[in-house]
Length: 441
Image (cartoon, rainbow, N blue to C red):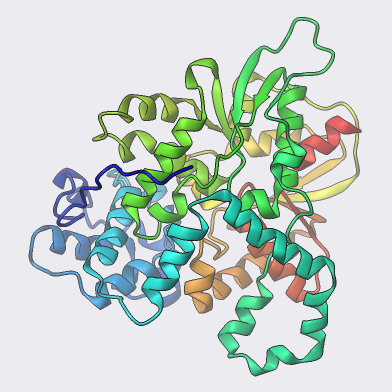
């Protein structure tokens, strides 16, 4: 698809141009402090939601200019949104967080040799077209499947790399042998259903999800088919732009949203289903993202009304409980931040798990505490991310569970890598995968 030529009007200041009622909502009561992972680790006011909002408001009021210290603080924030859940005043931290990072990028106070080039290559080139991402994924799959990755790791060659690069290499995800287009047809209908499907839903295939968890997309399609849903998976979807919105590239996020909207015929769909919590939280805000776009504003509002997390949608339509026992195991559930805090979806995934015969659901302490993945947080803030990961792993191990279920690809990968580093053989899966297994038994 050719790149858009529509002129992009970048605000002079994202925070100063923001509706001031959003900026002044915070009452500084401090109820958010015990829920903020970074504040609880450092006990520094600037590392709390209250402290960060004070900085944002100072910029909006013209009392402070965006500085390197401001930008670094905004990127030290996880964006987990636990503060939103705790806030009695209903502060829209999601919007504040995105505007603050956009302000940091607009001001270019973090500019250094290589940073801008890296961000452009990653966010504007690699993620611009899904075929580019798949090409890189296919090369990485060959590297892994031919045993070259294992050979390099055993050879000791990695020891010559800086410690940060070695840590990054250890996080390399395993690429699936087949991507979503090879697993899910553009349109599938429930087999053997004489009366036809009761619902027609669009399935989002994602970008990174498509490379490392395409099997979850297949599982999601199978579960939808088993629950009277025809499944439409338009080809060429690509990235939804959540990575860009959460990392200061707000105008790029708008472009990605427009492209995704063009792929779906919303008038013929009852719902748009996503199985990635971080993406889902962003997708539900397309109405706000494109509210000033005369061409896309109405369609973005329609989109936001129809986007559903897979667990949310299944409970809403009254899903069919499985009757067969796929296995007997103890399972515990980790709440992905953007599912529980961003979308306020807590009970639905647990309801799915509770209906699967043979599973004993064990409660997880601090299940809503961030695991440290937070998009690319574990790459840009590895020390804090690892502290949060170790805390999460301790709680997971304490449950004695055989399986850890969670509804976000970043969490899946973060916890998988953490457990592997500890030598623990606990399976980490999406809840919809467990439901799909039960239907297939």
